[in-house]
Image (tube, rainbow, N blue to C red):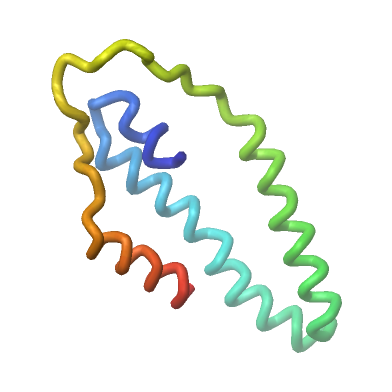
Length: 99
């Protein structure tokens, strides 16, 4: 969905994708550093509860995003992004498994 919002307007697509990726990386980085500190201070159970609450708060942001209207008419030119190949799917699954 982030990529869909980023490429809606053709100008500054790279900047929009970069900002979207940077925002997505803030949570894991914060959890990595802040979570390690919290485990030392509060213990693992309370830390997981706090991080779960923070993650659940992201749902509010997701549901507040504007709706994207889909064009039902045929496009005059092919889409900017190509259809994924099987190797792309393998890399995607590997990335999900590693994360």
